[in-house]
Image (cartoon, rainbow, N blue to C red; front, side, top):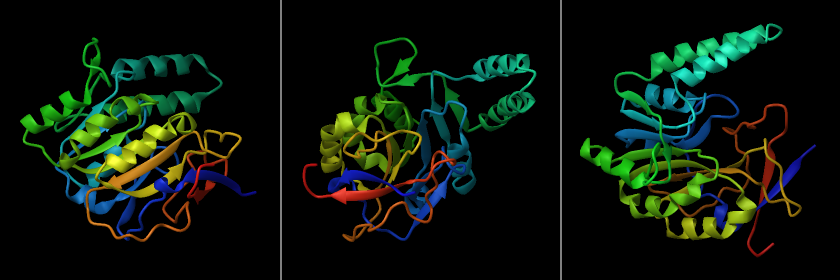
Length: 259
């Protein structure tokens, strides 16, 4: 069975031949412009939870410093999840998976790859940091070619203006937008003002659509590299994978008028 999802035409990406998939299969991987990866001198990831496969894959392609921000996870949190899984003696694979997460977290976040236990979007609360403060720190470290990966469960809307203000420092952006049906006007404003080109759009099929077919969650990729005017005609593409491997991907249909 094919499932269609409907989005306005401003979310239809430009076609480029330099797309690559970074990160694990299905949920956690993103399709991005390889040029924006190659041109970066730092990766800033906002939101990792227990999946830093994008950061790992990015680092294998481009050895630049990586800074991940997420106040909901830490080594101690991963240890607590492992201990909780041990109690579920009938689910040994779950416990093993969580033990491996501790090992992989410890191995990956070291040297020039660090995780800061902070939420992003505010500047006046303990445990929070603004996007502008993150960018200023990168500039102090002589990093001015930033690739951003952002998956922060609705908090992305609090930092869109800061992304626009600092667009000259951004080589690429992979961002997940939540509650699209409620924020479509914010998305339209962002895409119209953000100078980077939209080069990929994908629906997260873990989440439903509204009664007009609007997907609630989408992943968008932007690049600072040169693009043409030709639009992508069919999505998902060859590099796409359904976030939920047990369901078919949504087939995207773009419309040029109010729906």
